[in-house]
Length: 239
Image 1 (cartoon, rainbow, N blue to C red):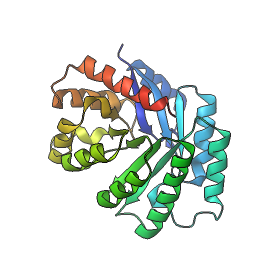
Image 2 (spheres, helix red, strand yellow):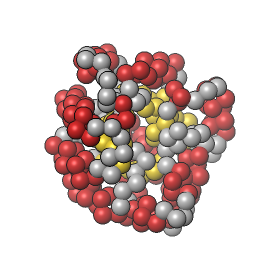
Image 3 (cartoon, rainbow, N blue to C red):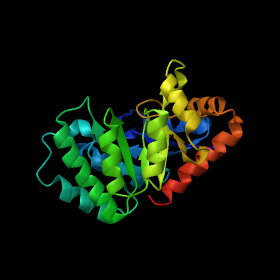
Image 4 (cartoon, rainbow, N blue to C red):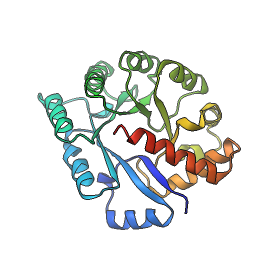
């Protein structure tokens, strides 16, 4: 059976995880990169990593949740990362549809500084703020996963030129043939930089996502699945 790792999910928000894991295993999904979104769920993600050896955790502040953060949020994030070396930083980023973009930038930059200092992989959310994101990422060269990538082929090329170690994670959005810009970006993406994710959906969907990407790139589905699996292992080696 082909193997898959869900490069970005939120297991802490799903019910009946035992059934989720069982169902995922039947289609070859054998690993999960679970992202927190705010201090409220950091410990939930940490517990999942401690009780499931195939769950890889990321903790951070999502751009939707930058308001009303505890005063000591950054120190607490640092301590959790120091005490749990396998944790990555995520889900973080910028979102023009979210609250207070200036506050988002402050929180994002603080987390990027921490990632650079601690040599952590970052898992990034970006909506409508690509210019600013590219500039900030260039200042903090760390291994980067762009989750649910929705940028253009041109943005993808710029990111590849600007960052030494970047991956593009694609969600079930690729299943919509009307998403021409996204499909064009996939055509331009190097196969060794592609990941697949479920985000808020059932992890099983990543099999369909991988198959769609193989179709778009005219690569045999088994070869594409193996490549994506190995890509995911490669970034996890630093996570």
